Length: 229
DNA sequence: GCGACAG
DNA sequence: ATCTTGTCGC
Image (cartoon, rainbow, N blue to C red; front, side, top):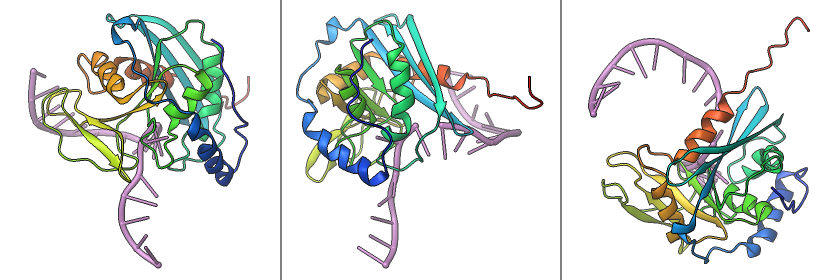
């Protein structure tokens, strides 16, 4: 599918922060999704081993979660892990995987934050600008903000607040299991994000597309090129 | 200055 | 993220 690069990834951490501040005004997080019309959902994930990054985008159909397409890419890891700058580490290899995608998913779910980020530019929000399509952040742990208790029943959630803003929710996708952190990325709103995540978690804590992408990204065979050939 | 800190 | 054994539960 077509992608829309917005800037070079070859930047310093200081420049990266400046880029996040410049891009933030372009995010749209007030448009609801028409959930009953969603047909294709993509899960996005990156695994890193020995400074080699492997990206996987797995597209599934709803409501049966059948795999429609898988796109992958491999690149040297270009940037260290710095809290708040994850997209500069995973963005380049994701861009390559996205460019190989044939289908056009209605929405993309990322392993990480959307606007639940110090500068409201988590990886789901940032890459949403590359895709110009709805994106949602689904993280396993919190980057910033705070929230109250979440009831133990599936579907319960508590607002995630940061500096007076509601940037997402801690959402219980499975009874008595730790909640996940959901936030809009681009071209969707918080309510729609919650609805879509619940529609994608029939059994496990993490959304099915993310689980499949995680599995695919981690299945790469490490290059054991010792002794040549 | 100190603590927090997606993957 | 990755490194890693056993272990509790359905």
